Image (tube, rainbow, N blue to C red; front, side, top):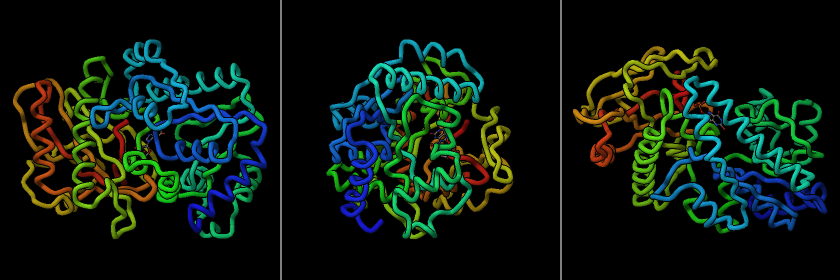
Length: 386
Ligand code: XMP
């Protein structure tokens, strides 16, 4: 990646070669990778069908539902509303793995049906370089300078595995001639450069990562209409306030810090009826387990988060209690991490005043019980909770 202009020229050539006169299905997830793919397709004047699947578990940022952002910035997108069908199913599911499966089928059913009904020839997805390295278990970055997009696609066929995102696309075959992955050679910061080139606003360029299983990854235990609505409210406070702080102090809501991490890479609130008696995900020897107890390490009394983080040992998720509201129904956990590519993460060193002010806003909501801050880096923790 030399610069956006050069990349876009190369990507346009690639798309003209492989997608000219074809109809291309492109799912917009709300995230930066699929947004870049869509903008490249449009730029290359490919016949593209952008689709956003609204299952009802997307986040709210600054009071705006994800579907509103899609309507605002990608007005051509077709919004497929599956809330009425999807929400009752997810409300009945307690098991974390089954929750993930519901999302996987929820997405793939719509994609398959739309591809069939709309007679799409190709599917474009937002796989980026770290996804490929993860799937192949190889580090492509050494070779990267010498690889063109086409050479990377060839690499795919040699490995015969497909450039698929390991986390939520695995095993799904769609009835298309091929899947094209125009941003497969890019890292996340490079994707953001492309979005800037296409004059996307800051709230799109620096959009924080969000998992495929959406807010299901942040509601510990069964999901209900009530706790989902609460989760959206508290999430909005955490994400919007931290964004606001970075914009005020750095002019944008994400910086590259001196460790080369995107800071903050993502921040959110997780909720539970009782955080202390739960087990969540973590990593032991690189393997995901669902056996990490949540441990409250102490009261919020240090000035520096890095200092607190340095006290963490062992296979637990370590929380500090910020406040016990002595009322309410749900515990809220604030999490904010910095990361290069989500494979490892460190806790964002947010100032004490910012955390206190977020906690104050959270405690104004009647359902809030206790508020914690998660101090666990990845590893041994994972970023999400399921
Ligand atoms: P973890 O929790 O594994 O998350 O440390 C790493 C990154 O991936 C996101 N994430 C997911 N994304 N499907 C996805 O598309 C998933 O099942 C999934 N689980 C986690 C998470 O938000 C973080 O950025």
